[in-house]
Image (cartoon, rainbow over all chains, first blue to last red):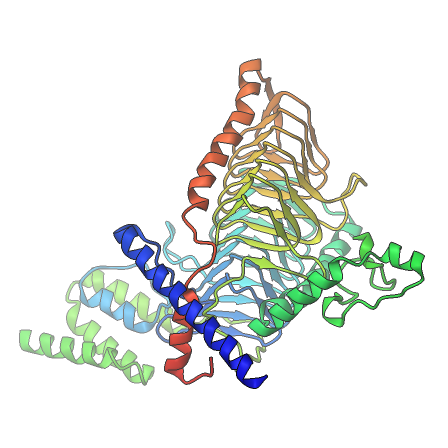
Length: 299
Length: 275
């Protein structure tokens, strides 16, 4: 049976080879319009010259996110899909060059341009965190995001300081020099103008951002709860995104096999089937259900 | 004097190319700067700049312990479909989902719909459904919260013939059939956009808001603008169908199976990794 297996394998190889040859013929026919697929060159953690990101080992950085330059991310934080955290790379060298050329630049400080993200913070999907390099006021500002901050989807944070346990709503745009104090909330879709200071415990929103109302105590508690939920979610996404090809294929087969089995029908027959271990999500993912175990068919 | 200038210039330039000792570099810099700025105004700026380099903003203490195994670059890029536990995102056979898109968790993309570049549909807490001929345009983020303030199921349901404009953010909202959501609009938890209504671009719909049927709303927060005429109402599904046709063009650009695996094999062979 060994030789038969080898024969089948060789025939398979021939078929694959002829398929590839056909593909090349088709590409020739398509000429210059053919689709050329290449390996993805997207770099998740990218260093610019000597400034490389310093990311803790607990942090979930989505593969489609870009963490570039002088960025520091503390433990337990998560950078979700499609984010761009771009810390600049200004150094003393560049400043000298500008002055020798005879032009006067606004970049006075040397290495203050970095992004520092605390621990337990989550920067949700498609948001941007930049430093303010050039400014109408001439100041260069680093971006500091504290611990347990929730930065909503598609937020734009540009040279701001966001203190611990703050909440930046989704779609918010925070311009240069904004300071969001502890336990403050920036409402969704707001545009916070330059150098605004959002005091602790208040909700600011609108375009331009104005004081809307004060936060109740349970809302403040909700902010820290949501940060905690995101830490748990991030663990799952991190595990899933770092799987190797073999693991992905095994789970795909398992999922296909397990999909046919309905728990209600099985219980009527008196069969108890065990969910394969790979397909069970940890209990603490979904909020409020940390103590009870929810049956999987009721999602 | 000019020789001195050019000498200092070349010295500083060559030294700057090797940023080994910044202390020495800064001293040379100060020397060259002083030599090259005869203008008193420029000298004033130079000294203020020198002062600025010496003062450092006190950095907050952040202990970061990086892992040496972290992958800085994955040749596979970002996977399009990310299953979480038992949930596997389902994409219909004729739905166009751009390669940039991330579908995670419980996401169902039904027939004829399209998800354009850069969108993120994250159904990790709750379901996301994209109905027939609906489209989610570029860079949208569709997420579902765990619970909605209205008490109704907090899944995000985008019904048939809905056009969600580019860069919008949808979170736990229900969009009934035949709507148009303008670009860069934000729909918060529990909002309901009833059938045949249009949301203007840039509108922010607060949590729990209901947009009644057949009306045009817009602004931040979303306010009533006017009711839609019958002709405009008839145009809504036509827009969705037009985008469906467009997505068919994009869909046919992609081969069902790619030949990137050949490049991967070559790459691995060049690195000596077993294929």
